[in-house]
Image (cartoon, rainbow, N blue to C red; front, side):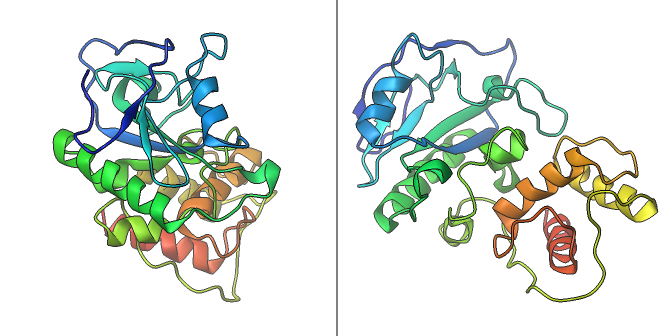
Length: 246
């Protein structure tokens, strides 16, 4: 079974299939379980009736469980897109992180758990040569449909530990902003920048619901101080900084 050399447990899931022919593993997708405890999450991901799985699950105490061979296509991303790639499951490794999620109080992610996430990601990055900007949230590839792992997930910690693309977000400030209902060249430019980074978004010049949901997903990952789907000066400046740092 292809997997990490880090200490880990194995609980096999029947929910997998072959990767698309010729597909190269070049993305890591991070999720939270949104379940009451890790054992229930693992059992669900290994239940044939659930029709979902991931390659790994990381418990709150840092224990790592492998459920699907890395060579196989786990069923974790669902309907998703990044840089116009639609079959994210064929090109990614999925990692579920035990957390109650937004529906059950959404606690912080313990340090020991974050350290395990960083270690597993570093191992995958080294073996598959995965670029920093392709370490993504489930919400990045499925804006509006998914919100995990959410704004409490410490992407800055991961970056300081050699994982992912990150810049210090610009501080909140006043100034002009764009929001749902606005139209024009400034909206088109914002949509273009989000698409350039990788998000699935239509370039319409209309700040519609899709634009708000994509911008909210961006904020959940990169500008977590205020997640409201409004393109304020801080959000736009952070986006520019990220693109310059690619």
